Amino acid sequence: MTDVITTITYHPREQKSAVLQHWNEYPASCKGLSLQMAELDSGDYDLGGGVVVERKSATDFTLAIMDKRLFSEVGKLKSSYDQVIYIVEGDIYGGRFHTDPVVIREAIAWMAVMQSVPLVPSPSEGFTAEILYTMAHQAQHGMGHPVVMRNGKPFDPVNGQRYLVEGLPGVNEVMAKALLNHFGGAAAVFAADVEALAQVPGVSPQAAARMRKVLDAKWTKAA
Image (cartoon, rainbow, N blue to C red; front, side, top):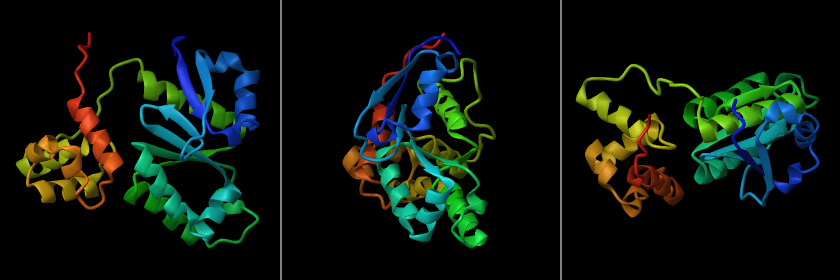
């Protein structure tokens, strides 16, 4: 990684965490890192590029499943950011609270499959600090080398349109189908304004604004 500036904004509750302590003690492992503290509406770390991270201990994650707090929490995060990531520290299945492993698996599957929210396991706060920095660097500056964004491009019109719409920020297969069903085609989806996009079930005004922002952005010539 080059020494470009990579900014991470953290919630005040993380100010005394071992994650920030790690960054302060090992600056060589996070070159160019710039930290900012702000009262984030949701999430613990804003990594830029529409990416937010919710950090939890294994115990807190298990409790969030037990009291069903997890589901509304994910919804709130997704309404504000394009990409939501959970980092869970410790053994999810070995906590001191007895929870049916099936319930935990179902919650993780729901996050990954239904909500497109990945869960990143972490063995320690130090590892969390390192992966957060790497994620932020990639969110803001990319990989540093060419990467194929998506493979297996379909040639038929039906799947091709869904493929195009799924390329919009925060749009998964379910939302792409809802958009196409509502507007009748990919061209109409891309032409719709924020108000029209927000009329589609499952599309919040914030999500609609993020789609429109990408569609209206000017292309910067690449080398």
